[in-house]
Amino acid sequence: MLFVLAGAGLWIAGRFGWIGLMLLGGATWLVCSRAALDEDVPTWSPAVLRAAMERQIGQGAAPEATAARRAERLTLASALRFYGRCGMVLMAIGAAGFIWQRY
Image: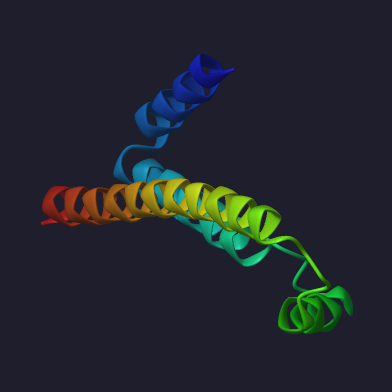
């Protein structure tokens, strides 16, 4: 699956040039930002307030379970940050290449 996605990315960049690279970077950045925002609960539902209240109350969760959940969340957040920054870099490279080619 990863090879298919990489091939599709190379095809888009080859087909559309620097603009394609900017589009890929923007899409990557957008997907990572949305995933980071929707990590715990969907952002457009009443579950947002319910989850916030449950976190404050604690719901009697064991400290081990809380620590395990926090470690899992940190692992996911670091991966999302990395790929989001890769998207930003792709956008910057695409913009620089487009400007360089244009002028």
